[in-house]
Image (cartoon, rainbow, N blue to C red):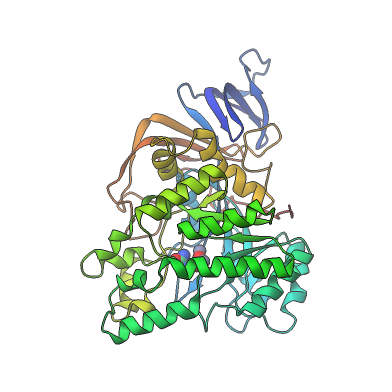
Length: 460
Ligand code: URP
Ligand code: ZN
Ligand code: ZN
């Protein structure tokens, strides 16, 4: 079997960087160092001089082919994972939604079938629990045995996704008992529903009202409540998509008391401003996502939280709905606009440009937040998330002297817009390898179809 050698690049891991060659064989990283004198013939050498070699991105928050708010996310496992690959993400952990009236294992099997043979990169699942029917927690062990070792619960969306506090407590307690993790969507759903109803009653039905109905305190209260519920349940807890300064403070406080509390934020909360809700017409629907975008003050607190280690993961929350679909469902009432936006394709380059190149975080921290820490958090490390001997050869070749211009016209996500339209960023993703196979070059997918494998995750 042919060897692949990436020569002359700078290998960046979360713990440090080194100028080195990387030797790949059978999909795995076999050696790292000065390998120029290695006595092997059957080797394809790729010159990576002047390039950064990064671990393939690990995005632990995506919604592919997922039913939500009366529709389905626009990217399926084929288009979404190809877009991920083109954007330097070689591992996804996607949310398997429990459908109305369905048992957990039934919904998980359905979601598994959607991915089977279609994914371009490796993937795992979290199981969303939206209805804790009698006996649901008894299925947790079997779910975990299939390698799905984390659950997601919602504290918002009453009547469809939301669990009441007793059910949240039960999920945390049972998951904690068997070594699982619970990802919590922390927003006070009842207060949001009241505020939203008041806005509609006052005739404020446009997409800009979405933000007003979800003020920062609706997140902060829910985060603080969930931390207390996790304490009562004696369980670790992981907060998805945190967006506010107060949430960062709550997580920091709990962690300073040695509580197993972890937090994630997303690319858009770090880089986009709430003023997008002031756009005319229906334009603001592009950023009708939950929680909403915030002010500069919150963004600065999120970056500080990342630097301090309070927040450990940056994910995309890729939950795409085309603008036309948002309009079809929610033109008359913002509450019916499907919540979510695209992001899987641009998470890595936006974080590199806005984080590293604007001196918000180091290169090593960027690798940690986008690959190493999510892999560790969700039982994928060190197979994923690092360039080390024995790991899967998931490697991104980034040219720091290149530039990337983002546009809906050229993106691979199945979307009619991107919130980053027209952004020109320093750095370009030259090539992306997944298990040693080149899957993307110059922003185009070049791998085989359906080559991605399901990743049974361990508990960590
Ligand atoms: O805006 C989003 N992402 N909405 C739905 C999915 C989620 O993570 O809550
Ligand atoms: Zn959520
Ligand atoms: Zn999400």
